[in-house]
Length: 281
Ligand code: SAM
Image (cartoon, rainbow, N blue to C red):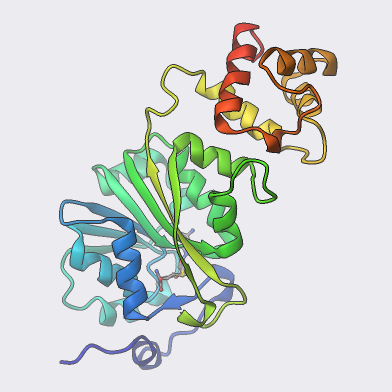
């Protein structure tokens, strides 16, 4: 039997979109293949997908991966998925909220190293990404479709307007690359913004030998109040005087009036070492 199109499946099952869940589906075959290709998923890989939707990306992933475990919160998609994933025997849909699952819960379901691939629901993009980046789970990479402006933040350069705490968090976890921009016209229903695909290759050893907890705290606090100087932000976050904060910044080799957004990861590592040596936590 010929494969049904996304619209035919949605019509046949009288599916009603839930906007609040960020339901904008992809049906374009070239785009689906391109996302799978960007992810580098191969026949040895177990894939965790977040947001099964109508299962179009799930199906495309299953043709290349060993196994796909796809999480979805909306049970009303069950009849849709029964049609769209018919005949696919290496994909499993789990009706659970990924944000409410513990690392242990996820590891129990998935059970091995995995790659995350997702056309993310836009209302929870950053928490979803951080949920995997900050966990101890054996995640090899994340390839995610997000709003273009969020993607720009993920891969921003130090000193640019898009540079943010999340940029640094991703840089500390590995290497992020924007692999393609995607027109809003390729989604159904069409959202108000264009999108982009970002791939993050995780390297859990990147901060080996550094005080990672201090570095994370420093990175978060540096962007807490964007219009304040780094010394101001550090003084609040670390409960030290502004003078002391400025002195540590100078000791690390930077202008005491510098703003956090001007420093690279390498610079933050230098400053974290200075704070660590001085016993500032
Ligand atoms: N993967 C499909 C595609 O590319 O066409 C669907 C993508 S759609 C942008 C996001 C999907 O994530 C929706 O089906 C939505 O119901 C689901 N979703 C929303 N919040 C979720 C959560 N916390 N955990 C798992 N899935 C979620």
